[in-house]
Length: 436
Ligand code: EPZ
Image 1: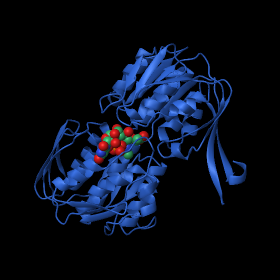
Image 2: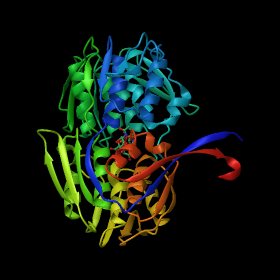
Image 3: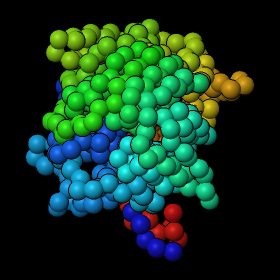
Image 4: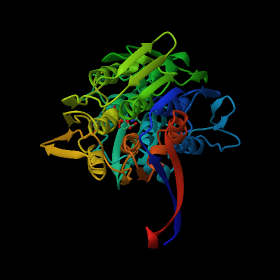
């Protein structure tokens, strides 16, 4: 058994959050846009691209399939993330693909450039079954052939042609894949029942600036006319709405007065409305992309929260709102209609004294005036973030283990929350199987 290192966070809560924070770029906008650069001729520069583990994984894969390395190809520079490729190979690194879900977004780009792909089913946060059937059916509608062989997905395209596909469910990743397969296909494609997330709007905005013809981004019907050539551009990744929501929930739990910059407030309307119902004061200014949240004392529980496709309540904010409910006055029933297994945060919160119940496919959190410190485990990206903000509300020491999950989506949650006045420290521990 070897030695490894585990990253843990140690939080001593009970302190209000005060101050201003400029938010990082959006993980879920950056990843599909990075995949899209494989379709472009010449160099692309992504400003405000978040330096997070999932971006680093995507970078390594794109360098691999693009025949580059950190010196000759994609790398972070002083101005942002530089992306470039010499050629395109349709077989991305197996191990990298297995490490995160967003590797699946490469399938559409590889079909459109290399004309084929061979990759494993992706890994990523264990929050549900997360099949790829919509992706596969959509590729077939564009003339591709996709087979499953020994746990591998193999797709062949030759020349893709425009087609029609109606999504059975507004899947974000499946739409991103089909957009990347369609923007250089022969002819026009029409997609219906599309996801309307801001990250889709950002991907379409990027493609249009690179020369693509895409209409209807942010609506449920999108039309794409295939282009012969798309060119590399300079593009700024918009602020991350889930990181913004996470820090707003942190302020709701800890109390305080926090100002967040580099975020389009309209992208969080649903979260803002919910936090206002709990008694927080939220002020937004779309002209300067800023949100201010103020919170004093215990919050009132919202009695029912159900996740759904945008503009509904985002599943990526469900764990964080569960953490807030644990401290609120009253009970909150939470149902995740997007990912059926995204309730593991509740069982970690229970280790800190939260009152957790279940009722069918819902979790019921009854708020308590105080929870107690302890050691809890980040079981996935947003669970980890939720446990960190819960710890801010606990007088005493809380340790969150397996924080590498958090680093997949947050550039540095410790740096950000410390900047707002939290007592939070990284602990990098040597992991020896014998004394875990
Ligand atoms: C994206 O995941 C995001 N990830 C997720 O954020 C986010 O929670 C999710 O969209 C929903 O908004 C990235 O953008 C990298 P989906 P994705 O396809 O594309 C089912 C985070 O924390 N489905 O919209 O994988 C699926 O099982 C992550 O940042 C099929 O059944 O999500 C799920 O129930 C977590 N068949 C629902 O659709 C398919 O072919 C929504 O999934 C595809 C999806």
